[in-house]
Amino acid sequence: MADDTKTGMASGGRHVYGPRPVGALVPALTRPAFRRRAPAAAQVMADWAAIVGPALAAVTTPRRLQSGILTLACAGPVAMELQHLADELLARINRHLGSQTVTRLRFVQDALPPTPKPAPPTPSPDAVAAAEKAASSVPPGPLRDALAALGRAVLTPRSPRQPPVPGGRTRNI
Image: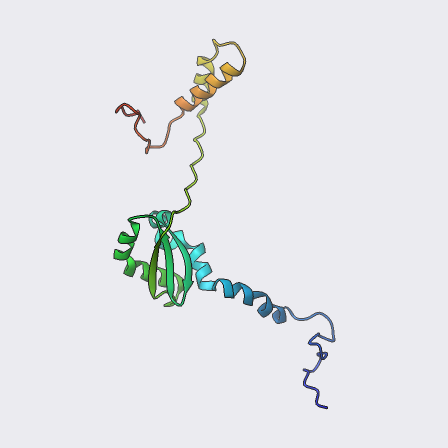
């Protein structure tokens, strides 16, 4: 009877002399993950904002990369603009990956997840002091705290891209 096991291995595939080498475990662990998403696809998904820039990353999301076709989700009329930019996008993506991995882009219309609101700006010490001074004539309690918080919010400078005030007036920035 011929023994077809490797030297140092038992017939069950276990290592006779101790623990198995890590290299023997890697294929069994990575195969299921790579079946679901190839390394190039994972890299495109992770680095999407760096590849296309913040403006396009805000209106597009890569969904899947299969057989050289990258599916991009975009909202509404952005797909038309992306079709005009397709050659440049392909060049950017393939340059980032280091090989000619993506050969075609496919666009699907999909609602993108809403972008999170930026954190409110922190009030300056001058704004805090002015708000506390303005609310000092009110007796201590919830009303005074609410008025002081309102004063801090009003006196804190906002970002330059503020929406206009209803009624047609503009805010001083």
